[in-house]
Length: 183
Image (cartoon, rainbow, N blue to C red; front, side, top):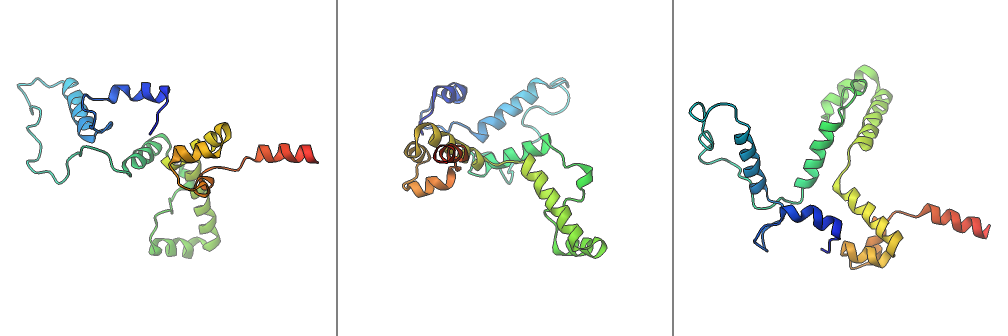
């Protein structure tokens, strides 16, 4: 994946001496987090736990060498949850309700009230949450407008221009300029 000078400057601090090492490693991130916690420790070393003493001998999960394809999206979702809390006016959050919960709400307030409330919640989440694929779509559109659709196709690694067209938004400004010129 080719990276420009800005991206190279950002990732430089994550590079290791091993050329086949993963750029971002959960194992290294966890070790760094634990080292930071140890540095900020207020309890003297003679009291309490020493680093590594209160860990499970065989934990169910350990940090791996690399992040999986879902980890980035989960991190973004958690960050959005911390940055934006659902307003009290929109409670209860009906997005993950079971059929029984929905039936109880509909019995009390009616189907129309449920549909309206649910639509407001979905709209709020669409405004305040995002996912990594949106970056891919935005980049595809930007590259296609600046350098052409073939450049966008190459960047995304698509074998077909039709696939790239799915990622690229329509240029309505261009359409308006064309119609202004031809009348």
